Image 1 (cartoon, helix red, strand yellow):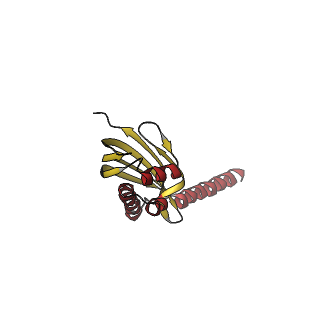
Image 2 (image 1 turned 90 degrees about the vertical axis):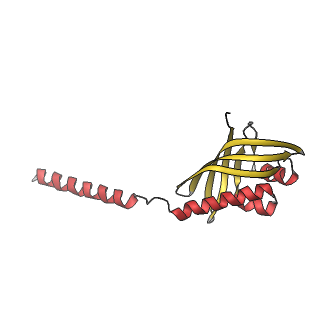
Image 3 (image 1 turned 180 degrees about the vertical axis):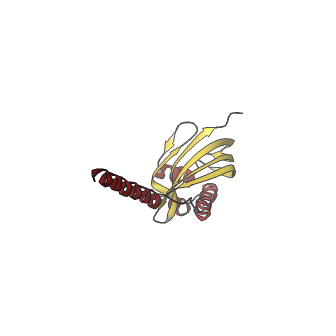
Length: 153
């Protein structure tokens, strides 16, 4: 009798565990989520070329940590302020090799950024690899963190 009770209990526990696994599996992120992130990233690219606070603010999180390839780290305010003031000035930005991985309310965006710059009136060129961490906040995708590294030539 005891043996039957143990086997029955084990069967119930196993069934409950399997049912729990089945209810906790998540579907793969939809293509529409990746498209929404790609659209937000494109809006940010355009806003960095023609910066205004109105264009940039909705695309970056209040908690933004924006790492440059040279080691400097900007906050939301310094990122927007430097772009609007021309301290960081992108004349052109081309994005290549972009990949997007959506995990829940977070997206990892990697790409190569090639740009013509005019930082503080000094023309230049840049090619860097970027990792952007985007987070869905209030139904909108916002850049939460970004880190750049120099490309080895």
